[in-house]
Image (cartoon, rainbow, N blue to C red):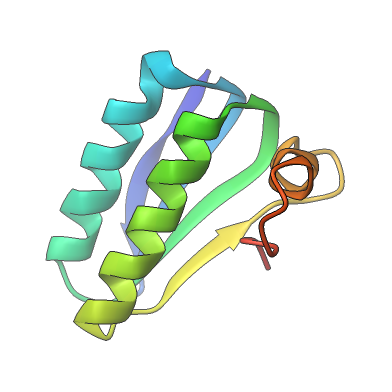
Amino acid sequence: MERAGKPGGGAFVIARSGPLDLRNASELRDEIRGALEGSGSVTVDASEVTAVDTGIVQVLLAARRSADQAGRRFTIIAGAGSALPDTVSRLGIAPLHT
């Protein structure tokens, strides 16, 4: 399940819940790409994500790299109940979230 991204106060928030996997990786990538084409910061709220696969981690890493190159702020929120921190840890990647 997903909640629509929404602009607010110069920031764009993309909130997701439920499982994120290869089936919805291209949709997430396209939404992040569109948000990065605008102005202001971009935040991916993954605090309610229940499962994450490596395709999603790749999308988030690429988005962070694109934001850095564009001089844009890119934040990932992953709360205690989110599956993202565990997946990133199992892959041996430094934490992506804040």
